[in-house]
Image (cartoon, rainbow, N blue to C red; front, side, top):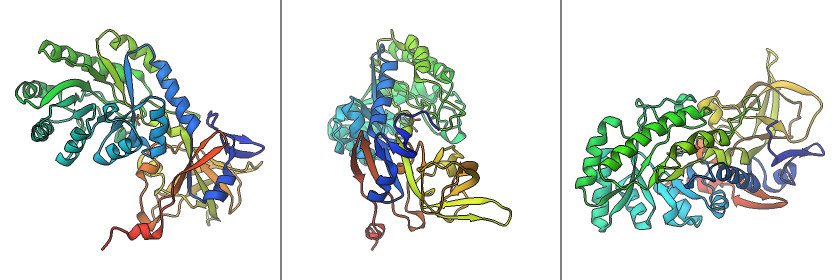
Length: 416
Ligand SMILES: Cc1ncc(COP(=O)(O)O)c(C=O)c1O
């Protein structure tokens, strides 16, 4: 069992804070995302505490979980937002986050998105190529504005994580190469509607070893020195997100304090405000997917399957990254069996666990897929004609519906 205070058993029933998950299933149906607001707040505070001695600004990376209530809960703690598209910017603004606390990333921003960001008045646009810088200048010039820009550097550091979530390596599409920096600095000298205010990196996600951050931060510090030498007044120093969480109790994440211990001494006296963009760290363990066992079956070679009503359409991580999620029966049983927990989608990759021990729960009982709060609901889809599930937020003994379950009408509403 994951060591989280926010999902725990009480009298043999799994609860979120003090609310029984079986009662939530009864009230809202399944599959259902259940998020603990106190977990979000507690993760945010532990992050802030770790970096308290550093002048910094934490921008929650909305891509991990863009539910308005999640954004709002973190914003109420003081967080800004890192958004990756016009849609995420819209969500952050809609959640009440002031534009001057929003930074915008994205390797392929359209001119419409750049215009939306500039007219909204976001704090920074993070640019990833020469062509994008020219586009930002063009749009800013049409609007009669000077765009505040950070350049995302590709530090060519290959962080050890799943290959699909490493982003700071020069074979990946992200960021500006060292070799291009001369041209980039020249652009800022010649294009009148760009102002270079920050340097940025993001080397990947779920990174356990702080040394990768150290190596990449050193490269960013070298760029800071060059930029200052050329007369640029760099205010923002963005080290990205990627801080790890525990999905598998056998593989506990490195505590955030270990990252702080390494990074603070490197940057504290550099005259910059450090930006962090944690996503997963804040939300992953704040939510579970509550799902009902539709059927159990045992095949001719004796393999057991639990077929549940949630699947890869709600949580694609196991299919995409072979990621580990703990799955628990909501009502405790004395006996366990080894089984696959699979969804109803027509893909063999539609599974939550394979050949793992699980309580011997019966058809109709409930399971909880833990650690589903990051890159879960945001990656959900209507594949197989599935309806996106409802979402609730729990705070102590209070329960709020934060997203209604989709309907069949919504499945076809945009089709003509
Ligand atoms: C630019 C950027 N910042 C922050 C994040 C958040 O990463 P994580 O959820 O691992 O903290 C991502 C994730 O892909 C990203 O691309």
